[in-house]
Structure formats: structure tokens, C-alpha cells
Length: 103
Image: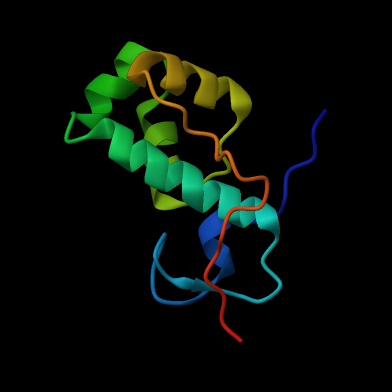
């Protein structure tokens, strides 16, 4: 069984709010992935009703909202469903996406 990090991605924020805030210097690169996924998902939604998208993609509505809000780590199964339904790649292409950090 895969191990999960304690806490949610947004718990690494030191200033501001998810996903545009500045993150702690010790935030792992996985937080940058969660930020990039949330931003890509928000762009792919392009004003569509989130509840409808979740239902049509076959994911829980709360899961979609939690990914967007940084309250949950997105898993590959959910991302695959969303990518297929939205016709958009959500996983970052950069193996180490940029992340604004506090000093």
C-alpha cells in the first residue's frame, strides 16, 4: 500500500493562500506537483460546473473540490479519469515544477 504524507498540500503554505501563496522552504517537490495539478485542473474546467464534471468523470465531487483547494493529494486514478474526461493533461511535464517559497 502506498504511503501518504501527513497533512494536505496547502498545509505547507507559509504566506498567502492556496495555490498562489508562498510555501515553506522545506516543502517537498510533491507540493509543487499538487499546485501545478490544481492550476491545470482549474484551467481545464474553464467555467464548467464542477459538480457536473465530477459526475461525468466518475469521481467524487468532494475529491474534485479538495484537489482544487489543496486539501487532498491527487492520486493517479483520479487524475486519469479527469484527464480523459476533460481532454487535458493535468500532470506537470516538469519533473520539478516551480514553487514559490519563503526564505
